[in-house]
Length: 128
Figure 1 (cartoon, rainbow, N blue to C red):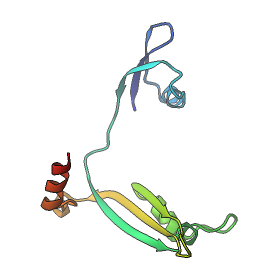
Figure 2 (cartoon, rainbow, N blue to C red; figure 1 turned 180 degrees about the horizontal axis):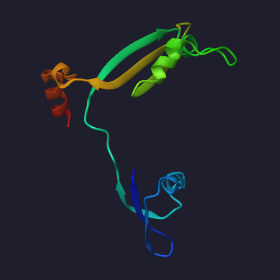
Figure 3 (tube, rainbow, N blue to C red; figure 1 turned 90 degrees about the vertical axis):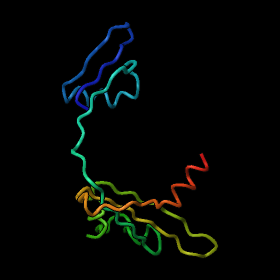
């Protein structure tokens, strides 16, 4: 965010464009007033590369107990452009499962492929 406009409690339109004040406004939890406009600066368009994996044994296989060093593989996942970790807990004696979905934004247009095929697209449109 590079600029934000809001109406304060006195009904006055305010504009914030100083980086430090934008951080304060972001942490105001809505108490600053009514936001009327936000101006963003976006990264240049890129193509994501997707790296789905899973860790047998769930979260405990990926993150060590407190006080132990974090494995290099785990740290590497945190450096991706976007990462999400989905924990499925153990159930009836079965071990948990942790999905590690990570993306970077270093892909090239010529390498891009559709994730959803034509049949899946038709199915989703029919369900709308």
